[in-house]
Image 1 (cartoon, rainbow, N blue to C red):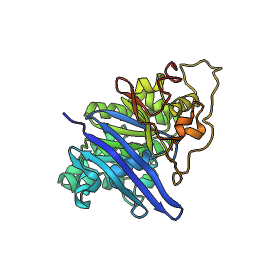
Image 2: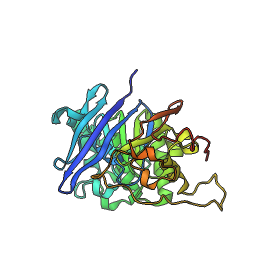
Image 3: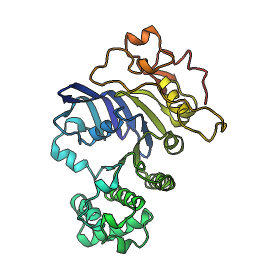
Length: 330
């Protein structure tokens, strides 16, 4: 059986007065049913633009999908009609955004926001949808759900609002959930609760998930596979344990060395990633990480390295992945 979602050579550009921003530049990856795939990278790496492209939420102008395919259950979402993509949004693919307070409508009750997609997409009556809304709130761990459905977003804490967003994402029994930095705005203790909730729900319901994050701890604990993005491209991809313990791209290695880890000695030094991400309007033909890379050689300036298999399903886009980086284990 084929993958649930297949992204093939996706290119999403933004046309600005300062030049063409190649926010996503030839990205390819897939997601299988029931699988959790993490997409990791710094701000501006293209991870969120890729997610928004899947649901055709790129503002046009200035943005546009200029090439590639996004196949969901065989249908190419990149160039299907607006009516077709509207049927898929919320029903088959749903999204959890980073900041729930700006995603929830402040003048509508929680119940109204939960029931609207069920009435529109599933043909439920208002009474049926309300009853399901209560069950969804209970499922995501909100106490007194029958009272909460009549409350408004400002009545709830940040953690509770994010639980509501998770309930909304599950309302129409989707096959795929895209979670864009779902815990960034929350306290650390609440972050762990929300991530554990998402992990358990997607596992129990058999829902696939793309989780977009800059938090490498999320990768280790919650993802099956990982795509590391830099400057609009995937530079490393593989099973989460390989990425976390045996990185084969200098950028992945730099990211891992820049954050504290429980499996390292307390005195272990943290190394920040030197330099700044490149200007996406002025990319040359070489490796975009080259100016910040400790492993760069002359060849890196000549062409962008293709993704090369490191073993199993582990791939890295670096000319030195099988040389200088081959023996590194974290």
